[in-house]
Length: 212
Image (spheres, rainbow, N blue to C red):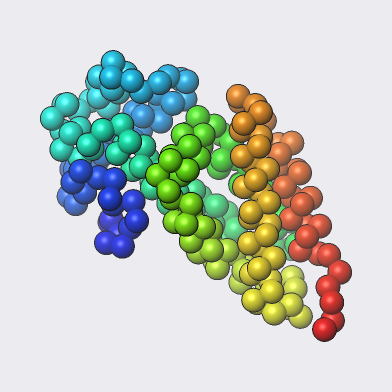
């Protein structure tokens, strides 16, 4: 169900509320991601191909999307929520050690952002163009808020607020590393980046701390 406080609702010409309309929007977004995966642009002619690929009528498309930017904004919203769920799900169980947690966390972060590089690049571009940075920062904070209690058992003497701030730093460093990888490489490999992110997370979380 669409959240009434969803900051991405503004990108819809008309927000889908019924199952049928949500399925239609989902088909368009899926077709758009397929087009991005094929490294295609979305000029006027490509829009016709997109609609054909999605199996919807042009009138149905314009019922929910105003233009290309509208479509990109909706895609960013759906990718943001999809990534949020995809990253939390594999971490929702107990880990034997902080090393095991860091490895699992890093692997799923790298997979989530690098396995569909064209989608991620489109989202990165749209975040800047549409002024969505604050929204993404709030989503990062929401994610870290869920992550903190999962990590707390490994650092019982560290206050939750400090651990939360540490995880924000880890998340920001990870996103920066992923962004630079996507700018340098067309189809980046997941495993090397995952290993680097795991080492970064483990080094920062396990660093010596002041007793003050």
